[in-house]
Amino acid sequence: MMPRGKEDRSKSSNKKDAFQDFENKTSDAWDDGDDDLLVMANIQMSLRDVQSTAKAVMENHSKQFSAQNQQNAIKDHVTAVPSATSSHGAGPGVGVRLNSGWRPPKSTPIRYTKDVVPDREATKLEKFRSVLAGPNTDLDELRKLSWSGIPKAVRATAWKILSGYLPASVDRREPTLQRKRHEYFSFIEQYYDTRHQEMHQDTFRQQQLGLGTILKDIPRMTSLAHLFQQQVVQEIFERILYIWAIRHPASGYVQGINDLVTPFFVVFLSEFIENDVESENFEVSQLPKETLNTIEADSFWCTSKLLDGIQDNYTFAQPGIQMKVNALQELVKRIDVPLYKHLEEQCVEFLQFSFRWMNNLLMREIPLRCTIRLWDTYQAEENGFADFHLYVCAAFLVRFTQDILREHDFQGILMFLQNLPTHHWQNEEIGELLAEAFKLKYMFADAPNHLSKKK
Image (cartoon, rainbow, N blue to C red; front, top):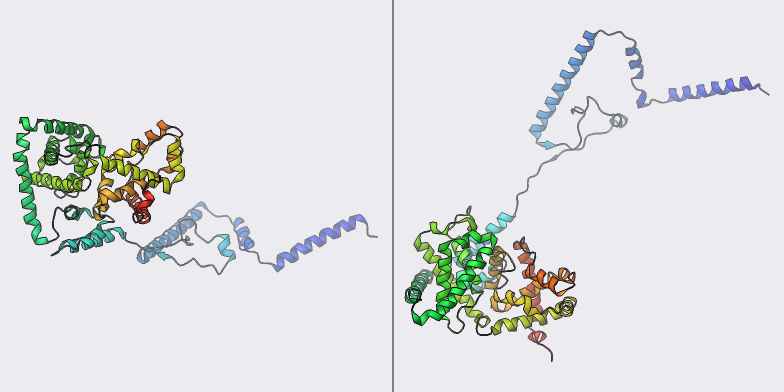
């Protein structure tokens, strides 16, 4: 048996031989150049040699970096992986050295894509102009285009035609405008200038109530407060509402009608405002008197056309609104049972929150910009203000179902319904609302018995 000392020396010798064999048989990348480094460590170098060598290396690196930048500028490429000559190092890293077949991936040129929305809007505008150019406007085609929104540049003309104020014939439009505008100001001369006479005192007192509503309520629409605080605008509204009340003695003026003039006035005013000037900041007094007269007369006639279709909303006891509120209640009962039961359990009656929706056509619930977009579709729909509005109100209420269900008392529900979070709404939200309303109309309009109360 070998002595323990010799045995240990033998094992140590065997380990050393094994390591030397491994070192001789392998060419590890970690060891490449190590001998050179050891040799260099033994060489005595002067400070001048070190500085000159470092300067040469830096100059060479700077030249390579500049050349690479020029090459990139010419090719106009974006390189995903830094090259070996990048500012992050003078040579490839260990991973690159171990994989001698590595090549940087091909760079991908930058591609610029144009926003297609302006092109889409421009195409839509061209379609409108083509339809409106005549000689006879195709009303069905105009309604079809208008349903999804009317471009601002042609909205005023489209509204006048869709409301029935302007004829479809292009040749008849200008004579019609001149005749109707002259007719309106003849009413002003005949009735407004005699409003203080005894025979018109009752009507004028009622009109004054309406003027008070304009002065108090319209300026509260913060997005357009400055516009409606102007004296010239309030005088225009006073004349419009007074003449309408005189010409409709069956209903007279009813609070809320003043709101219905607003969209027409703003849309017709926009015809005379440059694109870079917003309506709320515009000084109406800057416009010529003739232009103001044009806006006033057109607003009167279009408002009159609208009210002709919903006049039962404003006659004694407002039976039209009562009927629409009941229809809304029956519709919601069928499309959203949990919401209907929740309102019923909390003793919330539809009349308490939806009367204003019907009376003001949702104008107090959504921003004016959204009302204008909504009215594009109302005027495109047959009897849009009278019939389609019901389905819009149903879709509007159901949109807030989850918020209403979170309110567990009468006061909380009414407070929420009277202050709905719609101030941020834009055309996108109105488009979604109209889509839901159209679905409801498709399901229920041809089956009116579904909306009748069952005895």
